[in-house]
Image 1: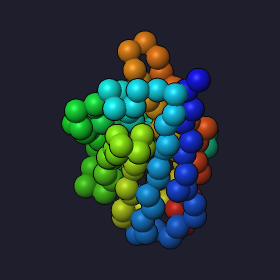
Image 2: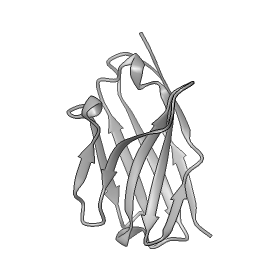
Image 3: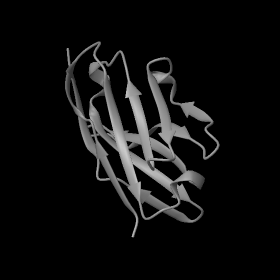
Image 4: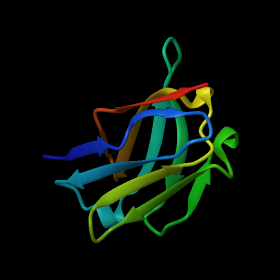
Length: 115
């Protein structure tokens, strides 16, 4: 059974930093694509950043230069380093891992940025 457990969310002032983690189990993480999504109150879930099994990364324009997605295959863990946080980054952040037809989601972690 695939399990994704996120951590690292919290309350931070604008301009601050947080690092989200997503620990994966029950899946061949090293050969899986992975990504982070977020959902703000009253809005649809949106893709934020992605990383391939080979380590190639991509980001939504609004976080480029501020967020960094990375992975540690030895620890089966996905990360999202978030710097220069803005109030508009406030959302529940979810990790997603894709291995062939199997798509798994974490439970989400709340990030709140105060102005």
